[in-house]
Image (cartoon, rainbow, N blue to C red):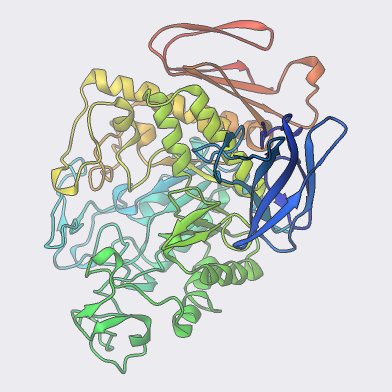
Length: 608
């Protein structure tokens, strides 16, 4: 028995499909006398008998449903002795060649998406830079009155962030360096020189912490970062350089020390903690008012909100509400914190409201797993059907690349992971994915790729771990290869501030240090710049089709080509090869022998 979900002989067309499209599925089962296609749609099983076609394969044509969703399938074959055997997805559920078995197997997935689904062109063409405002660049001397009374201001820009654990085991995040919006505006020429066309800012609204994920007032820029006028100035100046600005929306919870909850009574109007008569009281769930309330992951400083509350929805999504206000002020979209903790109908309404007024605005979700079939709180969720998000933070890609470069998997495994993404994710979503290597929630990429111990231990065991010169060079070499790889893949490459300068460190808070102005690794910066600018110049790297090869366990090849590609010419538009091993290797590609040295990313065929 045999079926390959990525082979047009067995599945036509391959990959995701639009609603109401027709798909033909085939199974080779030479010793079977009958075969059935077992389908699952919205938890309802459908059994459809297959017929042999002229090629001898069992064949079944299906018409996809009229609305988006996930369609699952596997095969049942009956042998001459009336024994029944099954054929389904491989154990890792990544598609492609499956496995026969004697019992019900894992199902293959067909992503059925809205035929009108599209994502902004600028996402497919973009290169993103993520910035934590306090840690990027200060304009002027920080004014003490703009910070909370408990804030600790660093005396030197080159100091290490502080780890100060509270009673709940969370970092208090009360140390500040003085970076602000004006400081970012002053560095826009440098940012643009890197090839960056999209800025993603971690939260900028009023909050007592340095990271701002405990929002105190969604309608006000934190004074330490500047004013609304500063934000509008940044967006205008960025737009003049062809750069868009994305904001971080933290809508699953607020801060306890906020206008809305007001646990410490810092604000004049009563919050939910102070009065059941407060207009904000319905936003929260209390087991026993006021002390016992639902909090994000149990942290009492982060009370969860009830996103089903009409007044909260109108506040966030309504005309003149939070999203509308800041899009009108110059933002080009939102990155949604813990998007998988927001109700799906909340996300659908968010998309409808945003696209109705700002059709070119982006909606990017923080989803750490496969966004096509994420299970959250016991429910299957798909974010790529055209009714919720434009893209997600592509942590699965980061993990697959790192596993390959660190020797935890081989080139075939990396190819398999990448092929699975193209099989499950509709092209508008795939080409808009936020392809990151670093982020504020992970150890610095160079440190991870240096492979010198655990860089993400339990919070109390973290410290400012410095790399030796040998470790740093090893991590840098691998990071350059990883960055070139994401610049050659479909999606929007995302650079975490300072990664291009050689910043290192364990995870939070040591991955959130201040940018090392004047102490950058110039070689690394130039390598990052060169790859991004090449991608910007070559449309085939941004919009071209893709094929992947694993000619050697240590070598992955990414081939990009467009519709004008002539297979007979045997010369694709671009091929990037990445070798992760320690020894020189030789392999055969495109009718010639190729040789590569260790941990090298090089173009076998350069873009025109």
